[in-house]
View: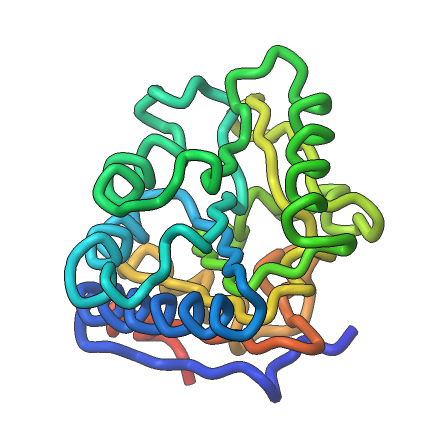
Length: 247
């Protein structure tokens, strides 16, 4: 399998704050460009703590004022199966840091129903919403992604059967470590994105980043390697601590 390394762009910033600022700047331009070209802009947000600073920057001038929020559709790359007000909810973090602070219509925000009793049914519902907004197969303008210390991205974990998914756009996955359920976009959706942006910061991500970018191509072990959109671009925004082991 090709790993898309020829089309990737790696930017190393001195600190996490600069990486977040560069990510916010890039997203603002990409969404404005998408709306100008196609009338709508579609983005999938990442969870975890790393993108919170980026979301807060997007909610402030000048980036907030560059984005035509009434024409932007918000999705998520993955979600833990918890209620939307739970401390570990990806939706809650983005809602507090970004969505309550920008003039986006509520109908443009498509959260994953992590609180649903049936995760597979919630995945089906989200897939329908994604297809309705972005077509089939869905093509997001921007997909913001993170990287876990085990080299996972979204909720695509090492050894997961979802890494082999080629038809479904959204899947329910059970994590082996915590024995909990998550909802996630699948590889076909990530690889249909016009622009995939990885935001990776912190020394605890350095080894995972090294194997993903410089190691052997084994997406079954290093799932982030599976993201290589053939008709899109991949950009890695890193701080110096995360990048310290790269060649």
